[in-house]
Length: 251
Image (cartoon, rainbow, N blue to C red; front, top):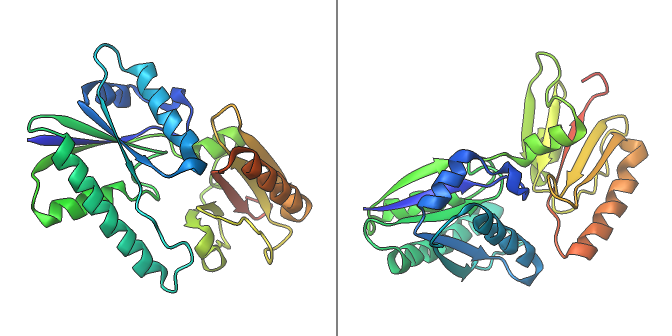
């Protein structure tokens, strides 16, 4: 039976790759690399560098494919994501069927951890539900950007005995916690307008890499600096991955 390895590789720092992940990389006969276009070519390069650093002996087959297009300004966000996942499932199924023989293992390398705001496991479940391919699956956890943010700022995520909310930029207005910290991921704009200026923010981008950026302080004092730094970094690199934590001053 074919076997799929879904490997969390951290936030881009090769030292985030765990010993379990290294073992899985070495076991892979094929590694599937999904190309997100020229603007994010750096992300593909990092994946290859991680493989070259840790895989010894005969290298696996690298199978590259273009990620299906996604509607970035949909009238219905849920429908748009479902359509995108369906297209991804068709692509992944075709890649597995074509490039992975019976008894072989194929790896998908996931930024951070496969359990947190990543679609790979949902895509694989769609393929399994279609019933055309039989395969086993192993998931290898990785260091998330949430952990890397806390490490970079040298802070605990939570106040003493308090909860932590993890949400997206799209849902921040409704999910911002009043009794604990809120960690915000997948915020394509990081506008920060309309938020209480007395909130404390810890912001980070390119976490764990040589390009890491960190800014912290009272939101009203550093919001413009974050926006400017983010805009300049995105122009310089062509892409940006960032995350931030918001809390009341006492947390």
